[in-house]
Length: 231
Image (tube, rainbow, N blue to C red):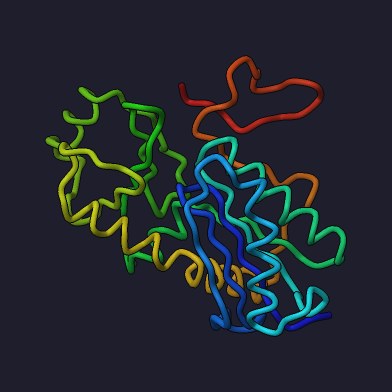
C-alpha cells in the first residue's frame, strides 16, 4: 500500500486538495481554487496537476481523507464522490472529517469554537465545536443578531467562513479567511491521526452533511438516506 495521504474538501467556496505523508500528515503539496459551481469540471484536472507537481503516482496514495461538510450540495457531492471512488478503486481506507472541525483546527482553535457558514442567501448555519456539531442550527438574520449579542456567544471563539456579514465581528471573518488558507494541511493532520488510531469509514455509508438539500429532494428518497436539512 502507498505511503501518501490525499485530502479532499469541497464544502466551502474553495475546492481544496492536499497530499501528505500517511503516517504524520506532513504536507507535500496542496492546491485550492474557487469552486463556484464548476467543481465537476475543475476537480479532476486540479488533482492530476497536483499529482504531477509532487511526482506522486495514484498508486502511492495509501489513504483518503475527505471533508464531509456542512456545505452546499453541488460542491460536496463532487468531493465525496471523488474521494469514495478513489478509496474503493484503490482499496484504500477512507476517513470523513467534519469540515467545520477541520476549519477550527486550521484556525488554531484548540478549545470551544463556533463555525458560522452560509445557510442560503441570508440565513447562517452555526456549528458548535467540539461537540461534533450536534447542536448545529440554522438562524435567520434577526435570530443570528440576537445570538451574537447574547451570553452564549464568545466573540473570541467565532470563525466565519465564506461570509461578508457586518453583524459578525471582523475578527471572526479574519479567522475564517485564515482557516480556509490552512484547510488542506489541517485535513491531512486530522486524517492521519484518525487512521493512526485505527479509525476508518465505510465507503458506502459515508454521508455528507448538506446545509440544505436540492430543491424537491426529500431527506429519504430512492432508498438513500440524506443528512438532515435544517431548513
